[in-house]
Amino acid sequence: MSKLFVDEIVHQSSQGSGTITIGASGETTNIVGTLQNNGGGVGGDNTPMASGYLNASQTVSNNTFTKVQYNAEYYDTDSAFDTSTYRFTVPSGKGGKYLIHASLYGFGNNNDEREFGLDIYKNGAIAYRQFMGKPGFQATYPSDTTLNATTIVNLSASDYIEFYGMVRVNSGTPGFFGSSTLTNIYSYFNIAKMIE
Image 1 (cartoon, rainbow, N blue to C red):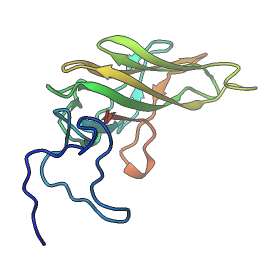
Image 2 (cartoon, rainbow, N blue to C red):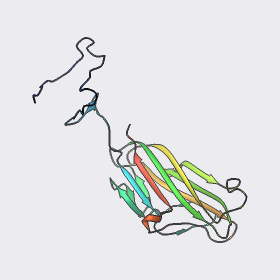
Image 3 (spheres, helix red, strand yellow):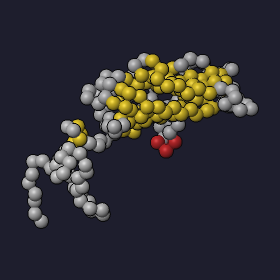
Image 4 (cartoon, rainbow, N blue to C red):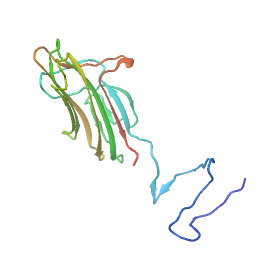
């Protein structure tokens, strides 16, 4: 095997445009070091990335949006999610577009759930809302329902994400269902920085 030592490769005829091909179809091209595009890194690894869940049921006030206490984690690559404040904060130098998904299992009492909402908050304000009531509940009111909310949000360093839910019941005490059994998780979230 021989090595080629150069400082710059340019197209022999167009000098600044055209296509330079490295390798042939079926071959593997191995890049050692950092691959850049006009000085910026190419590719990425979707971090920071965090995933957490509600490991016990949370009782809430009727017809009131309440912060979901996602208090346990599957993983958190950059320690960006705080399980005591239930908040994801973008680390320094990690701004960009983030894919955010949340799932919330809300319950009422004896087929008495009237409305159910799930909010994704950015810096204390609603960034995305999912909401259900009749006719979404069809012919009868349920005793429990799962809502999913997914959005893409542009975030800068120190911006933060929180989740709020609301269950309105005709009677009884509403809540968000949680479980400590990892094979039966009902309420959870996923956040990942997107590769741009």
